[in-house]
Structures are given as structure tokens and as C-alpha cells.
Length: 422
Image (cartoon, rainbow, N blue to C red):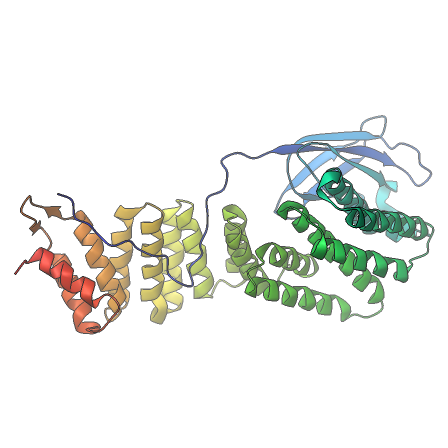
């Protein structure tokens, strides 16, 4: 007969990282490159930078001033001429249709300030993206009421009006505020599917950032206040378990200041909340890079690595964490053991529980879970006697000595009765 052992539960404070799909979609960015007089520019070196994750893709315009880049992942990209950063346009790619951009570049980067130059840079990319997202959402007209459709069209019309004015050199704050208010109402009140709500919520954040940057252009403290406001917004969303809203807010904060380790750490928690394993792991790696002497960051990074099956890398990070914070080493290795059990890496879990006991012999929970793990390795005779369980007996007895009224006290006694039936 087989021994029946209690299930392990993931501990509070560890990352609950879920499994992602095994496939990934790709998409295309194409477009044209012109000079300030709208003449095609051939042979221009371009740079396509992914904004939501790390990634750089070089391109070059052909003799007709057009370019084409296939095989890109779904995401948010910044496209610009390498010699003229002010030409940058931001675009979100989709699986169904190529993303189309239009770059206005000055060869050699000798761009002179002129009316609308700010618009043709970052501003146009943001506004074009919002319009594209609204267009995509409203293709399924049957999903929305007449009032909702009117709200969609009103916002889109006002964006077009605002774009036209800004391209001519007039930044109309009142229209932009109306756009932000209307888009807020769409996000909060319309019957949107989760993906569309996330995309429009992120668009809303970028419009707010656009307004804040414009208003604070003469205030050197404005960017930091905008970063802090986005970070606080993300913390509130994380606390409410609205992880998608938290991701959008934390990413806006990092776009302003990517050197903030705490924001990367919280971004990882938000990604974990929606089951995005790889982005969570990358965000934690960044937090560790920025603050290498933080044991908690390394602990969480180790857990993320273990969930991805990168066990030796996880051990390396945990040994570092234990060296930085010896007092917490027992808890760190115990967390890893629980994660390994829950992710199907049972043989390796025993090593983690042993390491936890070595680091903190007085941590009762590790003795109990190590005993349960040992019971899983022991042999049970047809008569119900457990053979080869002397170490399990020692683990349960140690647990009862340390925590005689602990949460697992009754279970530990039952395990001892299984080993040595009365």
C-alpha cells in the first residue's frame, strides 16, 4: 500500500507564478521614412526598441523610403531614426494586422525646433496608438450599447481634433483633459473584455503622462512627481488585486525612471498575479541587479527561477540571500522547498528543507515538512509499517518538541503512530 501524505500549500509571501502558453505570436512593423519636406529617405538606419520588455531590432529604409520588419513579438515598440531620436513614434503591435508607422527624420540629426516637432515625436505615437486601440475595440459593435458607442466616437473625434491642433503648434489642454475624462469613462463603464480594458487603461495612463510632462516642462521636479504618482497608483491597484492596472501604472513609472528597484520588484508581483512567468522573472532580475544586497529580492527571484525549472540558478540566488540575511535563511530555503513540492520537483524539495534546518535548527515548520518529505521516500509494508523512516521520526519528534501545540502537532503524532504503531 502507498503512504497517504498531506498536501503542501504555497506559503504566504512567495510568488504564485502560473504556467504560460507554450506558443507565442509574432507580428510586423512597416512604414515610411520622410524628411521634413515629405520626401522619401532611403538608406536610413532605424531602431525598433521594445518598451514592455527588453529587445532591440535594427532596420533600414529602402530606396523608396519604406521599411518592413517581420517576426516581432506582440508588444509596445518605439521606432525612430538612429540619427534623429526626436523622430520616435510609439506603436503597439497586434497579431492580426501589421503596425504601420510614418517617420519624419532629419539626416544627421540636425533637427531644428519648429511648430509641431514635439507632436511628430512621442506625441503622435501615443495618440495614434489610442485611436488604433479604440478602432480595434469598436469593431465588435454588437457588444456595446448606443450610449457606449457614442462615447467611443466622441473620444476618437476629439483625439483627431487635438492631433490636428498640436501638429499645427497648438497644444489644447482642455481638449486633452476631455479626452482623458472620456477615456476614463470608457474604461470604467463600458462592457470591455479584459484585454481591451487593459490596453485602454494603459493608453489612459500615457495620455495623463503626456499632459503632466507638458505642464511640468519648466519644472525640474515634475518627472519625479509623475513617477511617484504612477508608482502609488500601481501600489493601490496591487493592493486591490487589480494586477493588470498595477502593471500599467508600474510600467509608466519605470518609463520615467527605470533605476527604481522597488518599482521593478512590485512589477514582478503584479506580473505574477496575472500568471506572466517570464516578465515576472525578468523584473525580479532587474530588481536584484539594481539592489544586489537585498536578500528578499534574491529570495523572490530564486522562487521565480525554481518555478521555471532553473533549479541551480535558484540555489545560487538563495545561497546569496542566505549570506546577506542569515537570520532569514531558514525561511528562504523553506519557501523554496514548498515551491518545489507544488511545482512537481519533489526530489529536490528535500534538499531545500535540509538546508532550511541547517540555517535555522529552531524553525519548527521545516522539521515537519522535511519529515513529510521523508515519509514520501520511505517504503510501506503490506502490514502498514514504515521502513527506513528513522530520520522522519526524528524530524516529527523535533517538530513536537519545538511546537507541541503547533498547527501540525496532531498530524505529526499520527505520522509517528504510522512509523511506530502502538
